[in-house]
Image 1 (tube, rainbow, N blue to C red):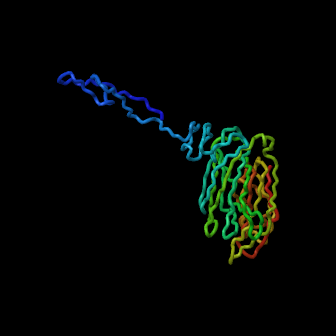
Image 2: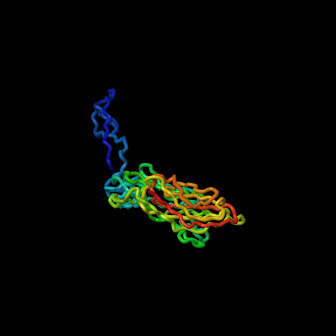
Image 3: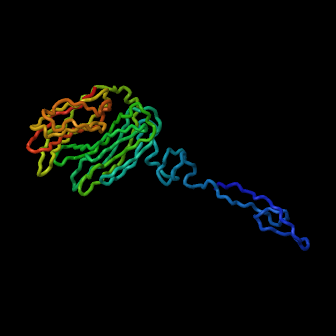
Amino acid sequence: MINAGHYRMGSMLLALVPVVGCAQVQDPPGVLMDTWADTVPDTELDLLPDVPVETTDDPIPDVPADTPADTGIDTGIDTGIDTVTDTVTDPGSGWGVPVCGLGYTMSDTSGYTDSVSIPALGTMRVMQLDIQITDRRVFGIELPFDDLVVSLTGPSGTRRTFWKNFESDDTGALFPNFAFPATWLIPSWWLMPVGGTWTLDIDDTELSGIPPVSTTLVSWCLTPIDPAAHASTPINAHLGACSSDTGSIPDCDPAGTCPGVAVYEMQVNDLVQAAGTPTLSLTMSHSDPTQLTITFVGASGAEQTLWSGGAGSPSGTYNLTGMTGEWMTGRYQLRVEDDTETATGSVSSWCVMAN
């Protein structure tokens, strides 16, 4: 216990009163000092509480201090002795060291935000995100992730929406296996300082199924990649990425599903930034293109309507104006809707090109 200093309350001259004989008057101990002789010494009063109040968890204080002292997750790197192991939010100490956030289970049509802190290591190039979201099922059948929008925001405020209503169909079978991609290399903060707060946002925008289906984020970790690993990566290099995900366009069925919807997706891992406006090259056929609406979602989450009930052929080259000057790294989606019955068609190729 750190004792506060004792405070003397001073002395007071007591008024003299007539007395009989020479007897001495004794004051109660520890109240006030007087001018009469005491047979019991006065003591000083300790009227103030000890400051600060001590805790007994650590023999050595944490720097910065735990909040609260060793009863929860530490908020910084400890230099002292802990009786509770740091588990989550202590930042890594260098390049290539992962910093992990918390897991969470979201109810349907809800959202979740979590943040981690990364030390001021210097100027970065690529951030690696490792994220694990469990498969979602209704009556044993897996559901797509087309109701999720997932974004990562860096210390500068630059936000990258790297997942926007994508399905992630791994098989294309009658009952496909949907999976959320686990590892992402994101260069959106190229040549920006890495140190500071990084925030992950997940939004569930639509009802997943009946009964409602929750979304479980098991874990997420950020690893600042050593800039030397990508020092020679060419910026504004040429990109020509073609999707292997093609096929028929389902017809509108007024008695069942209308419009008929075909969704094609592609993942691009090349670290390429567009010097200007990239393009989409599309080859497809349909007996009545006036029935079609074609929408494109780029790697930055930007949506663009390429075709909406026009005459002629939808095949051709489209300027992706929403991705001008953007990083091409990430996921893409081509969505074709047929809103009238009796006409059919298919997509035979689609390629994203830059520089």
